[in-house]
Length: 216
Image 1 (cartoon, rainbow, N blue to C red):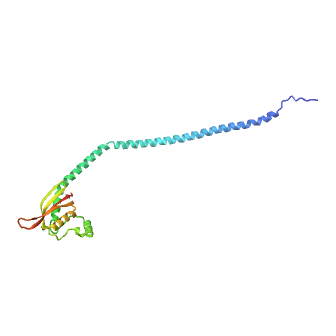
Image 2 (image 1 turned 90 degrees about the vertical axis):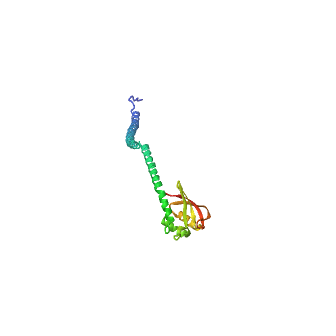
Image 3 (image 1 turned 45 degrees about the vertical axis):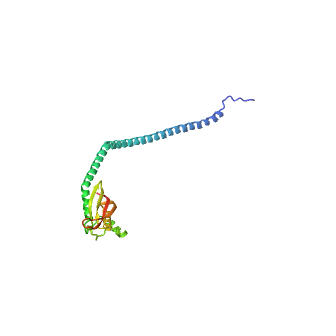
């Protein structure tokens, strides 16, 4: 006897039902991932916005400082020009004062060089060094300055020329030595001289010429 089962078979349905659960889990996972991504993006955007606002505030403070400095130095060229004018005026005044007092000081120094018992004005340390290095370069304190006298003295643009007579060449050398040591003279040069006879005393003398630069 053949039996026919007309009732539907529930076993395949039972087998298909569990297969829907992984799909639902996958959808949940995707939704969670999207939500997490959105949260992360919103957080990053908030951080970047905060950084941008901080940078904007810093730029604003910097620009304010620049504007302030620009305003302070707006008249820099005018101030610079005024300062230059003041410095030029001060330099001109110093030159005028030097021109008024310099020649007088030079003549006083020259008188000291030709005064018995006196000598050139110079730095003490420099003089001591000269004594150690070469004593012959130091002025002779016992020199009789009456053995030499000047007949001409001219100065132009701080260039000095002197001429005179001396008893002999050693007196001229001593005078030249004192000029070189003095702080008031530089670039001292002894020009060619010659012997001559004084028509009054009939004494043989040495005629000399010296050039130098004066300092004042």
